[in-house]
Image (cartoon, rainbow, N blue to C red; front, side):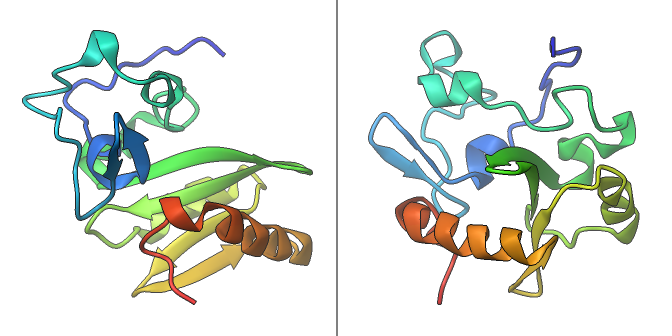
Length: 145
């Protein structure tokens, strides 16, 4: 799908999504060091930054779900039976109307509320998510057993 939107002033993924940027592990407690009024290395950003496109940026979510305004990022991820949605409230609770909109996609959803992880989806997805966490533990510092 061709992207029909631009990030604009939104930089939540540079602060809240766990990933490596030229040796720095980005996480909610360690935002990207290249973030200075936007991405200061935009033309030379790493491949994973170039590839990442939140669900709003893809043009799939309604305009009102702009991450910068809602404080919520939705990432689309693959699993053996299709796609699943990872919902991250960036220092904010995920509004009920936001979740209602996401349920329309009929995809498994992982979100966190009050520090507890919730899974919406079939038991197979719950098992897959446990596997996903075990394989990605180094990139998911906020997850505890």
